[in-house]
Length: 609
Image (cartoon, rainbow, N blue to C red):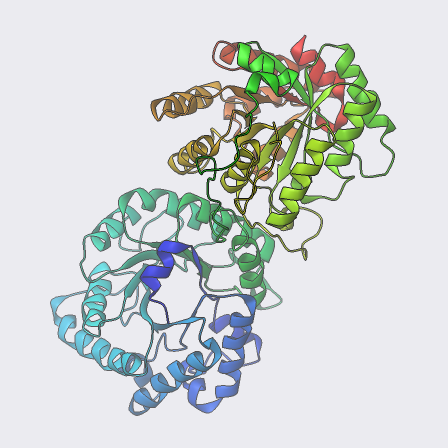
C-alpha cells in the first residue's frame, strides 16, 4: 500500500463522505451509538464503506469517530472499546481492498463549549492512546484527527498519534466566519498546526458548506506548506417535515471541490449530509481534471539524430503567422460550429468577417463539452468555401494520443495550418455527464507532439518527412485562481514549442499586463492575442463570472452592466467596455480574438471597427 504522503504529492486525493448521514438514512435512530454498529450490524457499515469505494474514494474513514472511552461510557459501552475499534478497521479494510487507503477516524473528547485545561490533559492523553493503540494495531494507513474545535486538544491527540508511526492529519472545525466558538481564527489554527512536528497534514471539516470551505481554503493555504484537506458539509441543513435535510446537490458540491483543487487543496471529501452520490460526482470530475490525471509523457525528439528536414519558419506557415512574425496586429472572430449538419449559416457569418477584413475565424472544439459538428470539418469547409484562414481549437479530452496525432496530420494534409492547443473542459461541464474523458496528455504534452511533427518526428520518434508546418497557438488564463501554477503551465507550453497565445476573455486589463510581465520575467515572451468578449447584459456578465472557468469580471463592470435597462442598452454598453479594454492593452498585445455572443457576429465586428 502506498504512503498517503507520497500519493498526495502526486495528485489530489478523494476522501469519502458522511458516515452518520448514511447510517441515519438507513433507518437507524440518532439515539443509537453509531460506532457500536461495527459490532452489532457490521453488514450495514461494510455496505456504506463499499458504496464510497465504488464511488471512487481514494481514502475511506473507519466508523470510529466517537469510539473512545469517554464517549462510549455515555452508552454503557466502554468495555467494548477494543472490539468496536478493531471491527471498525477490519470492515473498512475489507471494503478498501488493495487500492484504497484506510484512515483511522478519531474525534474530540471535549465539547466545543468546554474549556481545555491542564486538568484534562492526563485523562485525554490516556483516552486517546487507548483508542489509537487499537486502531494502529489493526493496520490503518493514517490517523485522521477530525472535527476538533480546541487546538490544544488537537495537538495533544496528534502527539499521541505520532507514537504509532503512521501519518497524522488534523482537521479543525470553524464557522463560516473562520472562527471557533472560542474565537480562534482559521489563520491561527493553521499556523499552529503547520509548525507542529507531529502533524503531517492540515485541514478543515464539518461546520460549513462547500462555498464557505472554499473561502476558508483561500485564507489558509498561504499559511502552510503541509498538504491541506477540506471536507465540507453538503451545504446548510434545512428543516423539512421534521427532518434536517441537506439541500446541496452533488453537482453544486463538486463545483466548489474542483475550485478548491485548482486553488491548491490536496484532498477533498465530504462531511455531514454528503453521500456516495456526492463523492461519485466529485471523483469523476476531479480525476479527469488536467493536473490531476496522470498524462503520457511526451519526449522531445527534435534534437535526436534523424534525416535532415527543412523546418518551416513561423512567417511561412500561414498568413496569420506571417502577420504575427512581422509584429502586425491580427484579428479573429470566434464562431462556434452548429448543432446541425447545415453549415450554410456559419459560412455566411465567416464571409461577413472576411468582407470586414478579419484575419481568421476562431473555431472552438466542443465548447463547454457539448456536441456540435466536427470543428475540423467546419474549419476545412470555411477555408475551402470562404477563403479565410481558421484558428482551429484542438483539445485533449476526446481522443487518445494516436487519434490526436492522426487528426493533426490529416488536418494539415487538408490545408489546416493554425491550431490552438487546449486541454479542454471535462464532459461534466457540458451536456453529457456520463461521458468519459481521455486526457492522455494535457496542452503541454500535445504542444510537444506538434513541435515534434514540425521537426519531422512522430510521438514514437519515427521520421515524418516532409514535416508539418503547423502554427502552434496555446491558451493563457491571466486570471487563474492559482496564478503561479498557471504561469508555470504557460511557461511549460512555451518551452514545449508554443509560438503564440490566445487568452481567456479579458475584463481586467491590469491582470493581463501583470501576467505578461511575469511571463516576460521568466523568459516567456511570445505574441499574445487578447480574448475579448462584448457583454450583452448583466445576466450574461454574471453567467460568465460564475460559470465559465478562467473568466473573472471585476465588480465595477458588473455594476456598469446593471445600469443597462434595455437589450439595446446592454449590447451598446458591452461594446463600449470591450473597446475600452482593447485600448488599454493595445500597446502590449499582438491582436484581438473577439467572441460573437450567441452567434451575433455584428457585435464582434463592431468592437473591432
